[in-house]
Image (cartoon, rainbow, N blue to C red; front, side, top):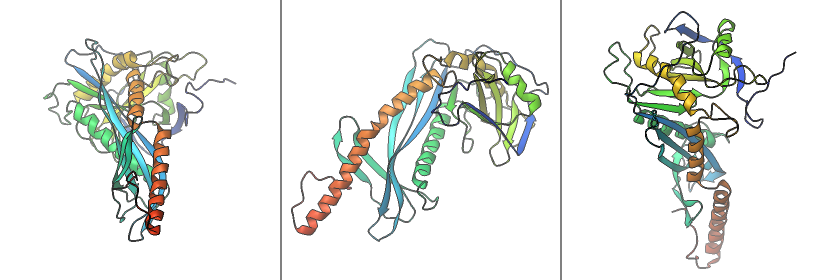
Length: 359
């Protein structure tokens, strides 16, 4: 019997490794039919900017809401934030945060007449809390508001990622636009391709599209090395991907042999017989770049996959949303004040000038 550790903390859902086989789909070799490690290459001088993009959703209160017409549904006060860290891949200038800003929404079911919610007065730790109404169509379920906030965050993350990156053409004449800006997006790519040089970094290996005859190469990779690029299409996923694996660091003997391995992906055209040279260029430099950005175990329990810029961005995003406990208190006090106002008006008592309002 041989026992190995999963390197991620025990309270992380699912851990770093599960290796659930993909039951349906297609995997096609597009770079080379030879399944062997490919050495990393130096970063090209023309690559001027690398952006690390991430997002974070948060449910701040679960609600049951009823409008003036008597219609009701599950709802929620929630927030999401996306942001980026801009890096110089050659180390000639310091990293900077870009556009880290929280958006707050009042997620509610379809067909409700809901007004914007403004919680005042302003608080020095949480700022002004203004929730814009945003309806969902996922059905009147308790989980629907959180799922809606998650989808809004993913859409904003996608828009930011592609807006920062260089264009990646998907035809034979794909050398028209040199690769000046590359976006590293935390997590798998979702939604449609918007044409940017965006790389999804999948930190956990929850599913395994490779067959038993190919998985062994992942454990044999040296730091910076990668697998060949394959064209991958899941059976239940309408968006095909180019995907490959990179090793960021050696795995200590007490960890499972895939510790330190990350799966990367870029959008792919439906046709599986064409590999854009820009995608090959990104894959070739990915090992060198990610080995520089990978975190260390004594600094981050999700090392090395949770990149150093990603950890810094996570802290900035948490600050932008404010302290969750203080926000919850303000929401509770706000609703209590509204109930007191209604009771006071029914009894003919004057309305307090300090009352909080939904208007």
